[in-house]
Picture 1 (cartoon, rainbow, N blue to C red):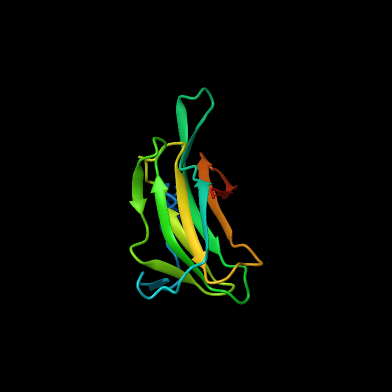
Picture 2 (spheres, rainbow, N blue to C red):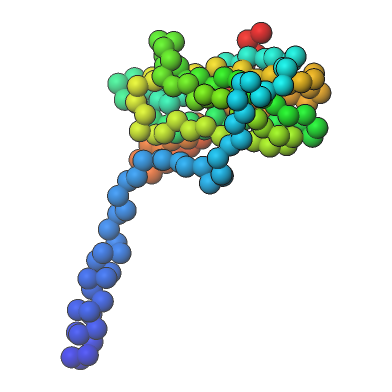
Length: 174
């Protein structure tokens, strides 16, 4: 009996600690990929096929009566679907609901090789962009592409213990 009590007293603190709810963490994502390949504007070949896209980025949305907000981590995904052509991204800018620039992601051009991809992340804790946030993305190629790149934002968030995600597609501007 004495051994049972000692065993209980020994195990009880561990049981108590293991039952505590884990602290809520923000959905902060980091890329597990090495740094992207950047090319100076001077070293970029002549780009004849240039496109510009608008991509909605829902960093937050209203819910219930409109008095509450749910916040999201937004991942801008750029995918080169061509098996032969490089794509040079020349602009990746993030704007708030008022159309004001929050962040210019590129100082140099981003090269994505055939079948390659790149991601840019707006962290969960970012609060200044609003429900109408968006990206403007521009790219160019040396030749006309047969397979267009996939450009989309993946919006991920949670309310309580319920997590959810949805995508928003790019809209061609020119």
